[in-house]
Amino acid sequence: MPDSTARAKRRLDRLGTSQAVEIFIKILIGISGWTAILVLASIAIFLFLNGMRAMQEVGLINMLFGESWFPTSKNQQFGFLPAIVGSAWATLVALTVAVPLGILSAVFISEFAGKRIKDIAKSIIEFMAAIPSVVLGLIGLAILAPWVKEAFGTQTGLTAMTAGLMVGFMCLPTIISISEDALHAVPNELRQGSAALGNTRWQTTFKVVIPAASSGIFAAVMLGLGRAIGETMVVLMLAGNAGIIPPDPLMAVRTLPGTIANEMGETVRGGLHFSALFVMGFFLFTVTFLINLAADVVLERQRRRWRR
Image 1 (cartoon, rainbow, N blue to C red):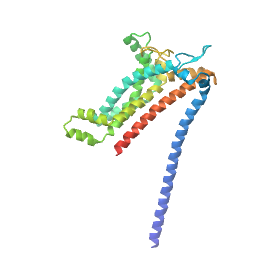
Image 2 (tube, rainbow, N blue to C red):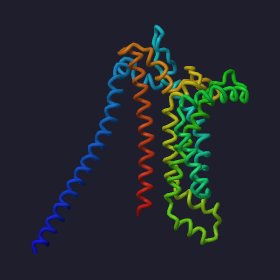
Image 3 (cartoon, rainbow, N blue to C red):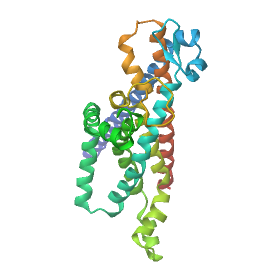
Image 4 (tube, rainbow, N blue to C red):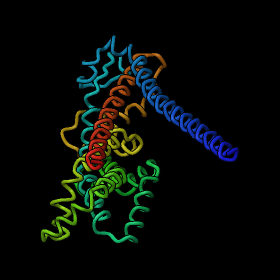
């Protein structure tokens, strides 16, 4: 009887210890989550407060839709439109390259590649993601810019096309990885049911698996879009840095992140130019945040759907 009582007491002690550890871990996870949220909110507030002067003196609408950017002239102008259009062209070229290549690569890895090839492909994707952007910029200057100039007959090889092609290469790991995860998450029952109806592997992939994973693939594209919009070093080196509104991607452009990186070190702290760059940063932060948020919402919906 005393032995039974002692064993029961030890079990209760262990149970109490495990519950205490579980509570501690939950508190730690909660603190980590709220810390991340507070850091994100602090960044947004910091950008907004430093941009207050420009928003008050120039006006947010005037900056967003202004067509001229002359921050150092006597009559200062802080129009974001050239940088917004330049970013749009570079991003459009990047997605035109990255989306079809990324999705088709993900389909091959998920549905057709053997285990050995799949492992090699994933290693290559991880290596691609690890290449420093400045190295890709140098490759673009040495190889891609001369090719664009010769192939399209442009005056310079530093264009939105050049920057977009290289940024598209940089977006591939994101799109491939997330799309492959979405395809892998599709239940095998759907594949087996399609095969039982007489469909070939290709028909099953393109008529059953891809539609079932479409929301996850869309999220991958959205995250790739966010990656492309926020890229700085490559567009700074390859886009040409021309503050004009380009009618096509075969012209030199200036992008939002490129403008901030190029000019922030030359501004007077607390000046109007300094403040305008913070407004540009706040606008870029808001756009990328909303894009990533939309992608996360879509991914979470897909996860919930496959859990049912």
